[in-house]
Image (cartoon, one colour):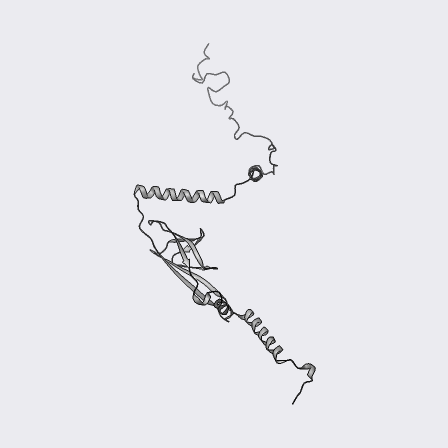
Amino acid sequence: MEFLPSRFRVPVRGSKLVLLATLLASVSIFGGCVRRVVEITSEPSGATVWLNDREVGSTPCDVEILHYGVYDVRVTKVGYEPLSVGKRAAAPVWDLPGPDLVAELLPFEVTSRTSWHLALEAEDMSVDSVIERAVAMRDRLVAVEQTTPAKSQNDLSDDLAAEVERANGEAVEPGQPVGGPLEPVEAPAEPDPSIPGLDPGSNPGQAPDLPPAV
């Protein structure tokens, strides 16, 4: 028995497509996501951790990453040798391309955890070790200077103008002389005439009650 006119009927194939589109839209709105977390521990704990030259905390700590792969890890602690090593965060099977689509469509959050444990050695205070650490520190500073863009002449002039403005209280164009009166830091002290022996023409080495030397 038909209750709707033919113009209001939806074909079965079309209704399935509409249902599928509605389902995908609702999943994309209410679906969960995948969190990728690296758990970093050390022996002893309390060491400072850098991940790709970015400080991320002290052990034990959890660091959230966006992509799997190899990361540069540096761990330091006072009294222990600094440790620099490459560590890999590998994707689990369910987060590989293909299955990860299913994980993204789940209506709850899924967490992928990777654990890294780093053992530190007590600091070696021998001369060779100290020299080696100094060379490593120098190389890191040189690398940072090479990656930092040098300031142009205009930037240096702007910095100089800002310094002059802070010191003088007035904005000064780069290359222009600083205006305003020049005043000494401290005025010279005038002699006190009430002090005996300091009158004009008197001899400081002679007693004031004696007549001036001829």
